[in-house]
Image 1 (cartoon, rainbow, N blue to C red):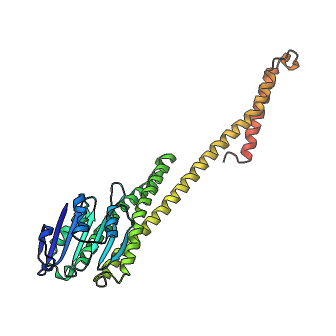
Image 2 (image 1 turned 90 degrees about the horizontal axis):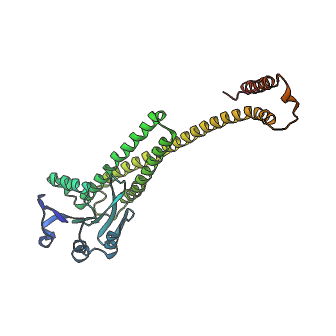
Image 3 (image 1 turned 180 degrees about the vertical axis):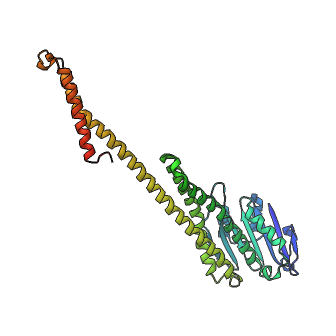
Length: 319
């Protein structure tokens, strides 16, 4: 699907103008959005817009790392939106020059729709939109980054719940939850950290048209990404601490179980020895003819077992 949004020199909005009818000199700037394009629509990047072949090739082969490239008078940006359901990155490609911005993405994204609606709603704000496509690019990136926060906040809420209610669940269940959170945080990190590096380059670039005027705005996005990256690292450290705590707790429980089994085994070993000796079927065993032999052996076994228990208690094995 192709849609167009044009801002006239008098700051009026024209939406849905067919590409073949657009006369670029009649407008202050134009935004063309290619959403889930067909092969014929994607080919317009070559045949109509005449963008650099390398940039067009990057659009066709996803998933590129977020980056900023310069081709003559056009800047090419690869951005990553976030799919909140799968936590996978959704690539958005931007072509930017002094009077045109072209966005290209393989799936319809709510961030793009929100930016589109915002520009239409606030097109009368000459102070902002007079700066052209760079203001539109800022709006798009800002929308993408803002959508990172709810996903990360939900993970932090789950992490806090595990920390507060962890004693009510088994160690195995807790470990599964912790490792699931760590995997989701890793997916977020793979999206957010490259975007942070891209914004750092944009903030410090001198080649983007009118970027100096918008440096403070892009710096604000960069600050948000720094905050997100710090939150992810802090959450990963917390999951590591929880993981180590649960592993230690599980090891301690296993040690207590093994200690108990060891004590029981040691107590019964001499008793088993005695029972084994008098359970042998030899004909000439003098003790077998004792009148009180059975009682004496039982008393001996009881005293031996009790003595060992008392000795273990004095050694602190049952603490």
